Amino acid sequence: MRRSAALLLAAALALCGCDKLAPSKPAFHAIDVTGAPLGRSLALTDHNGVQRSLADFRGKAVLVNFGYTQCPDVCPTTLADLASAVRKLGPDGSRVQVLFVTVDPKRDNAQLLKNYVGAFDPRFLGLRGDAAATAAATKEFRVFAAEREGKTAESYTVEHSAQTFAFDPEGRLRLVIAYGAAPEDIAADLRLLLNS
Figure 1 (cartoon, rainbow, N blue to C red):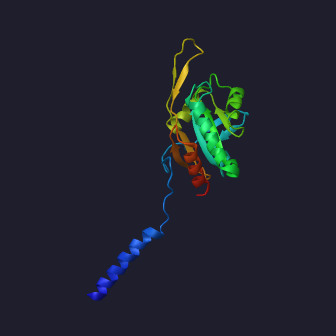
Figure 2 (cartoon, helix red, strand yellow; figure 1 turned 90 degrees about the horizontal axis):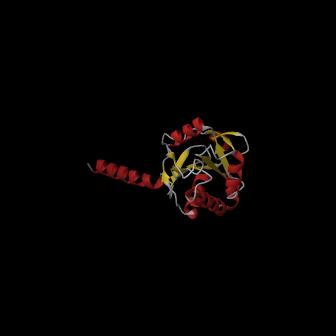
Figure 3 (cartoon, rainbow, N blue to C red; figure 1 turned 135 degrees about the vertical axis):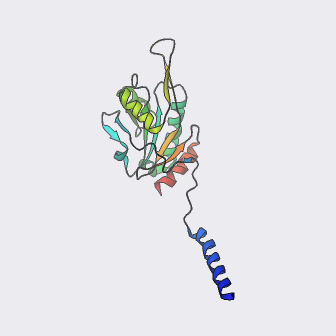
């Protein structure tokens, strides 16, 4: 009886110790969506005319954000925050690729996208496609985007989701970063992704 009790106690202690030995999950600031069935593909043309897919950026952490160049506030704020986060990484910032996907391909031509994203960081890439490719991308990432009439036919706005999707260097979607996240928090999450 004592021997059985001793064995049970030893097994219980061993199991308790396993928790301490098991690797803990990283403590991300953003929402961890590892394994979620979205963002599995992205096929658009960058502002230099190069066909791009997520696989092109393997080995880097990738941040994907949807918006448009005439966005009055959300898009420039987000891109400024992402640029600040990348700068905070120092030399590791070269291991991060930001992709800005336009939800307004009618107005956002390649040159406009290049000038726009380049104003935040020359390494950022603007991506665009025709209406069908844009719809496929927003559907794959479950991003909302809808035109709203303006005073003239050319002054419409586009309501759209404002989150940023973060992929690890192996190309797996890992995080959804909320609009307004602090650059320090984004940088901390990117460090975890780069070192995972």
